Figure 1 (cartoon, rainbow, N blue to C red):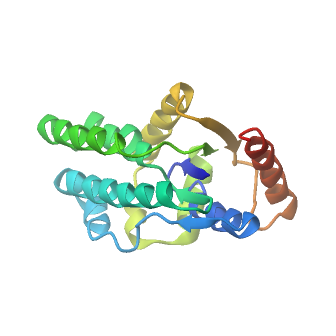
Figure 2 (figure 1 turned 90 degrees about the vertical axis):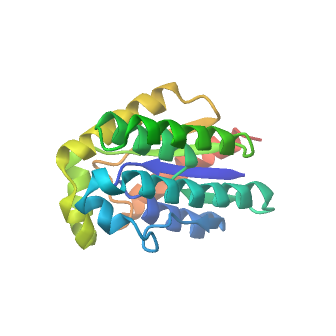
Length: 204
């Protein structure tokens, strides 16, 4: 199986993906954040670096999905290729950080790529409001993320809600994490695992 975990910046995707990989003995595919050469520049000058950043993420995600589709082991992926296009690239375009010409070039590449990969069997969406996202972002203390604006996070949340509402490529599980602490609270993590087990059982 291919399980995708999605959600806004600071929603807890990477942490939960690692915990679930250990819990279920799944292979783990993490997002290329630390080795992304454009990320720091992007937060300092979004107009200049948006297109470069999104191309890097899209290519990285495409390689991951190809490997996942060929793998013999269930894999959990930290963020999906669809989020790259329908959430982040679209948000940057709507916010005038990506030009019409670059956005259309990006979409052409994206649509060519997804013809060659299968969608996840299950998508887990971590839904969080802005205060939770800000708390988590501050807690992990990445210097380049200190420049993230609240309206940027809010716009991403809006795009996530719209995308999840219309998503029909496979099963989806929405988990509201505002009042959960699945790292420190065993009961919260067990509740998530139970929900995922129910969804997985329904796939067979």
